[in-house]
Image 1: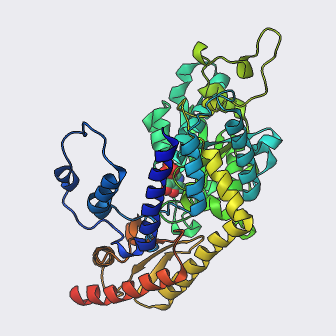
Image 2 (image 1 turned 60 degrees about the vertical axis):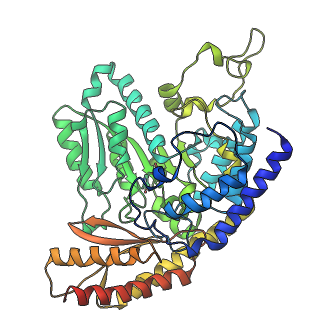
Image 3 (image 1 turned 90 degrees about the horizontal axis):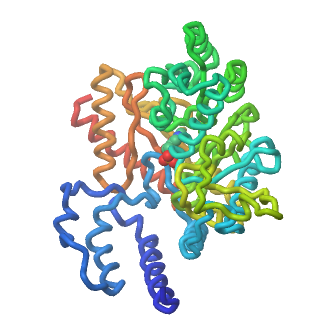
Length: 490
Ligand code: PLP
């Protein structure tokens, strides 16, 4: 790594990206309908024998790669959930990849491991988490790459805690995991990965009456049945801000059920956790002191570039006893001490996650927190919530449309509701409306299905998204609605 050419190449990439961000709203938001395999035809079959200048590579990115991308950072990207990028997130990411240290052990990069412990406590405090989930209160946190990884770790910790109590690995056949029909699919995958029998994953129905939140009564009924048949309740997931609809499970009530049955309670706030830095949203986490673990993704709506997931646990011991290893090649004075020097009270983050090697994510989140401050970050969240409120009101005021579930954060779920047609026809009209809007390339949204109804999701949260972009997509939707309704003769 030659420092001179490193600086030149990095500057060229920064210039390239600055131009990209200047123009990002000019690209079709969703990759235009290109034939699969297009890129393979454009690129050679083998890697080059000799190195090439960076400008040739960037030319190819511009010509061959950019047209095949869906532009997640476009201000008119409203699909899935946002994946934030920001100048601060980018600066932090540059420091992370530039320093390229690997804090799997405290001793492998002490300041990197320690910064992580500081930053997860800062984040926990901002979200209003109880002290028992923070290092300062006996719990603690880790930065992982995704909620999916974090969930597997908590399931493994819960499993081993339960098996230790039940006194043998055979008892795994009795362990049961509970989720709702709105819970993210990763919990089912995670349960499978840690050996929970597939038949012991309970998907409990929700309904419009509870805003698609999981009720304690519904959980109790299923748990009681399982206990009566000799099964052991293991793990309950409460989601604050579900993926499909942004619904909220009542954490306190679910926590009380979990406590009564000795279950591990995980609170998944992957998307909406960011909103909890605003006092007006902290009520959604009421009861979080009953949780064994909590996770949220700063890479979604917290101005932090991919990837970054915060996981907090009340009892680090349960996590580390499920995940720790102690091979000879990793033994060191910090962790193991020596004859005359005791082990330091150090965090070896390898024991808090699946992989050994890990990125220096803490520096990225630290830069974001320092550059924006809590005030700046709250402003970012509130700007999107205000835009979502505006959109929700506009939809509600147009009699051709309906808001399908009340908005809680910055996700609005809605659909066209031609009053005189049957359910299937309404779904078809909405499918066509969504396709018509996405085909323009001026905005990109995705859908969900609830109670058999096809609904369109407008997920606001892009770092460059302003109210005017939301107003534009509403105008676009109204225009396309006229066309679609005329074409389908409703
Ligand atoms: N949980 C919820 C509520 C989500 O919305 C998502 C993703 O959107 C996930 C979990 C999975 O997150 P990740 O992609 O970080 O694994």
